[in-house]
Amino acid sequence: MATQTAKPASAPGAEHTASVPGAAPSRIRRLGRAVLPGPAPGANGAALYRRWWLPWLWTAPAIVCAVVFGVFPFLNTLLLSFTDAKPLGGAASFVGLDNYTRMLDDSDFWLATRNSILYALIVVPLMVLLPLLLAILVEKNLPGIGFFRSAFYTPVLASSVVVGLSWQWLLADDGLINTWLEKAHLIRDAIPFLSDSWLILFSAMGLTLWKGLGWYMIFYLAALGNVPKELHEAASMDGAGAVRRFWHITVPGVRQAMMLVGTLTGIGSLRVFTELYMLGGPTGGPGGADRTLPFYIKDVGLDPITGNAGYGSAVSVALFLLTLGLTLLAQRLTREDES
Image 1 (tube, helix red, strand yellow):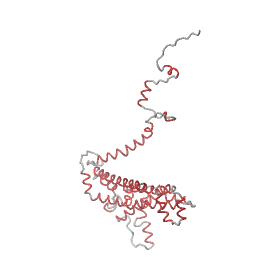
Image 2 (tube, one colour):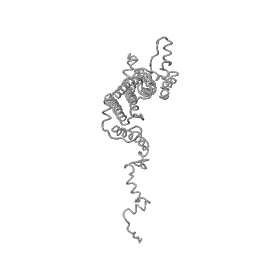
Image 3 (cartoon, helix red, strand yellow):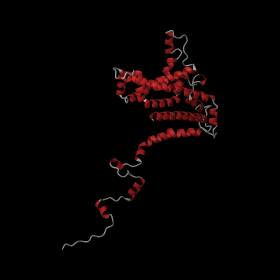
Image 4 (cartoon, one colour):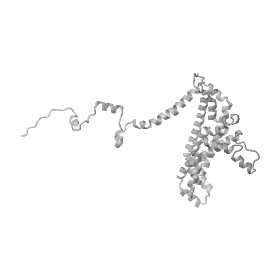
């Protein structure tokens, strides 16, 4: 008879522990898994080794930059708008809504607001349409078309200050444009591009358009690539001309890009500063008649002697609300177009 040797009783799970060494996690490992939970049940592959905080680790630098350079300045500006803080620091006292009340009664503020809105109303439609026409021209694969695409994009690469100086030279009383017009006997006296308040404003608009055409042309080139060529061919066979194909095929096909360009251009138009500073001088045109809201914020809020950072912050909040209203309007128009 075979003799069976009785085995001593073991605790539940001992056999599994003995067969798989180290299967039972240590107390520290269990605590770590509780604090730093692992992947969801059923995960496989690399997800088995991924922790919930890992995506936040990769995005942490961007989040820190957004908080430091975006959220904190905005909250600080909002707080300063209720004080009489000075640009160079020092004691500041709470003044409540006095800055906003002063702003509503300030004729210079309303003049700057008018200039900013007028700037947007003229620049935005032209910036939406002209780059589209330019993109249609350079979209065709013709010999040497790459040179023209590069030439149209070159102003985007130039510094705004360099472009402003170039336009000063072009528009001065003895500049290139007035000289040519006088030699062609088209004018008798020089056109005051840089001394008349309205001409300065319109010249700055022209500078903005000239510098932005190439940038938004790239947007439209990408959008035009998604418009089916078959639609143009079918419309052409049906007798539709170039103008009808443009309005009934091209425009609907790039409508989303047009909304994006309009929104970006509108925001940029409300923030314009360099063009007017370079063409109108540090005063923003004769008597400050061409100052926009960013220009006015610089004058009333950042002047080290007479500036009031609290009042400048209140004007900045007004500019933010105006920009936010434009953005929400653009989003609403986009949703209505999609529906």
